[in-house]
Amino acid sequence: NGDRFASFSEVTAANPLLDRNDFRALDVNRDRRLSSTEVQAPDAQSILNRGMHTLGTVLNTRAISGGSFVSEVELKATYPGLTSIEFDLIDTSNDDRIGSVELYAESAQSIFNRYQEGSSILVSLDLVDIDGSGFASLAELQAHYPNLSPTDLNIFDSNDDRRISFSEFYSIDSIQVLGKNK
Image 1 (cartoon, rainbow, N blue to C red):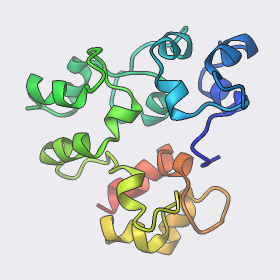
Image 2: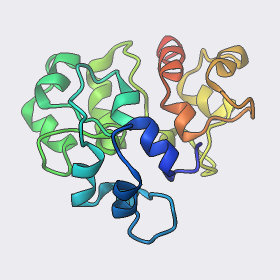
Image 3: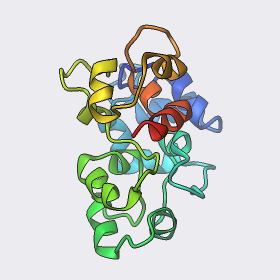
Image 4: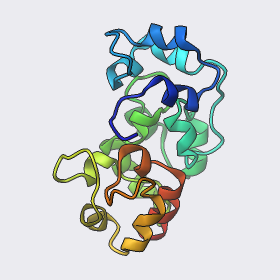
């Protein structure tokens, strides 16, 4: 919902195999939502990834946001020429796989920019969100995607609030629209 926390329903939408006991195990502070700290905890990934498999492509960001990971081989298939040293720079957790936090980190995006030439991979929301509101306005998006129109924004502004939340920004619709407007 764009609040940068994951509720039980959001977690199970990404991985329907998880149950309330799994969620309680992850919710260390018992506030009934998962923060990025709780999701990135060492034991959390084994719970979140239960029953999930790796991605076939980096552009399947819904799966990455849902807790899947991409291997070095898969990342190199998407970005031919990517070196093992660059993969290691992106893999900040040193677990030989890339998750959503690593994929959308500003340092990773600068590496991907060298290879993408028209690809639809997104810059991070934090990079676009100049005013720090946690949302991206049309003007903020147009700073990175100059050809983006108000009509384009309507395609992935799912709640019609004229600003783009975290989940809207990383949606498949967003990737398709922003990739065409880069």
